[in-house]
Length: 208
Image (cartoon, rainbow, N blue to C red; front, side, top):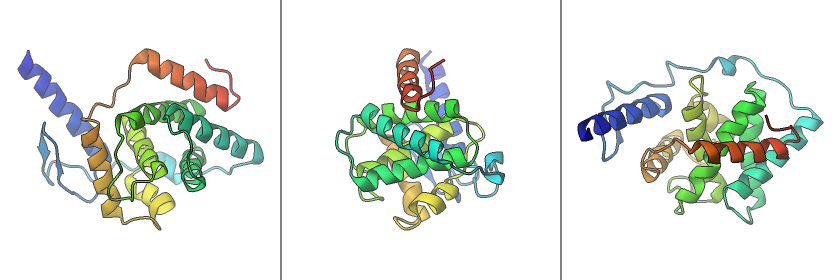
């Protein structure tokens, strides 16, 4: 039974890494080490079909994005985010809307990210440790976990982090945060439902 659990863990880690890895960097954890040959690169494969089409953001959508960002910080237990943190989180949510992810998909992603942040009370290292930086990297991790058709890391870097850090530093930050989460990305179903309901309510959409 223990061998089965270890095998399942290795498979889960490999799946997460194959989604998230960029440029063939080595990822290491206590459970497994993935080599360059076995690690998929999102720069050449697995590119989301959402990246080929965008939508514009109207005034109502902008208000919805601001409300979702505010709710995200509340659920993440970040009481006094800076204006820069709020702007970065809003930009990340805006990007997901622009690339035609549905409200339900976005709320699911944000719900996961908000549950990850309290589990990580230290900084993100490579991206200077601001709460907004760490939270948006966690949004990326949650996005990859929740959606097979996820946007590659280079899109997130180009649109959100280009002036903040290098792509290599961002890649390392993703690896570090995954390690701090012990690669445990699945949420309790009840907690997930409550968080999604809160996010939908904040977006002024009735929870289903």
